[in-house]
Length: 104
Image (cartoon, rainbow, N blue to C red; front, side, top):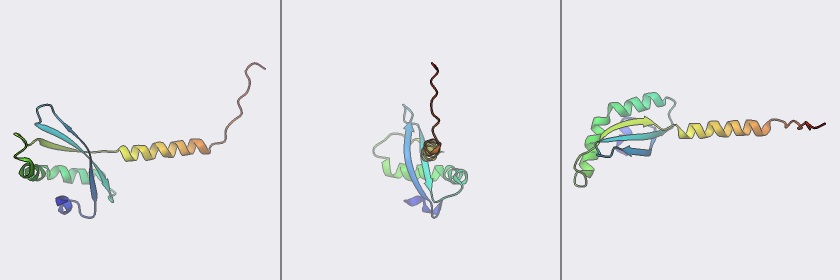
């Protein structure tokens, strides 16, 4: 909610977070909607990682000993699913060839 200044008119969703066993490092996977350049978006978020970590620390400081170092990555699962759906649709539209009996 507070990141609107970083990426105006872009919907950012946290899809997955992987935290190291010692809770010192967190890999945050994001998906972006309403943007044409996800590379620029992820670079912008990573440029503000320190500020995001500070705001996160202000919210969770009483629950954790260490606020994890945040690294952000693009979650391309949606693009992968769309690509696979497109391939399956393409395969389904292709005319089927009759199988020839190999015994004849």
